[in-house]
Length: 362
Image (cartoon, rainbow, N blue to C red; front, side, top):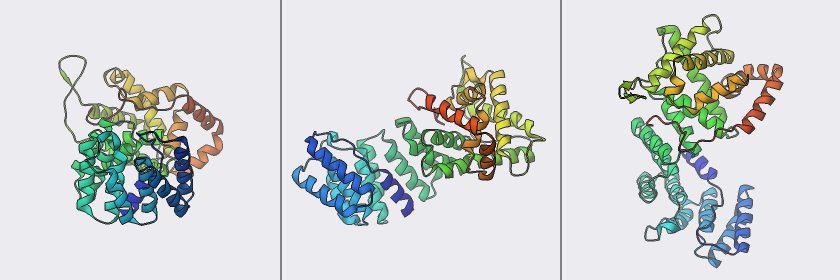
């Protein structure tokens, strides 16, 4: 878990822009300190940041970066001291950020101080109830203690609070992977791969996405159906009468689409078979009117890619770390398609908003 916490801390290296304006020269110094920190020149960054904090005691972003560079030097007690100043709740809320509470909680976690880590994240959520990053941290803590349902609740709260935060989808994919609601692991993994394709975590999530489909097809082979959700939850359709839950409709169509693979797969499920299955899925989803009943930005993306003749390239890119040798073979013979896909994605990036986001609870 310590490694995971360090990853979260390092990912937070940034300049947030101070609530209280500082002279341009101070901002330039802060930028130089952050550049030094990113280059691994920690003593140089620390010296600059300490000078800034002495000169401008209310420059909270400089103090935050100072705490961060101290933590990267494993000087956790010193870093906690700086962070506690930032997280003092006697300070006005407009002087604080959820980042400050996240870092302080992570620092306590680095010291195996579970009680203070949990208390800090909870305190941060009281100050910033819609903070996705803090709810994700709480979700990670629940998962560490084996409380998967509580972790999933926190992930859903994170997504509803801020659907643009990428790590909600990363951790959501991982946690749902271990649950009886694996349908959401598929969607959250795919959203993460679209909005953070170059993340160091992308190869892990690519493999996870491929293996979810592989296991779904294996289940179809054994049981004659695919079940990705054990949840029974009624929804309201266009009329007053309840309609089938989205997850049930999705797995019904995916099951029927898998019938196309009878003579088109081996026991490891070629990536091309996922392409075949999703192509048929799009056709059936439309034929049964589910595209009008359920709004889903990922399934709509399949439809658009199919129209452009790019769904196969897209699927191979998503699954490339699940079957790397197959991807390399595909890339060797389909360079033009991959280049067209890259251009298409540049023009049609998946942008998650409060109006189109996907959530189990939505």
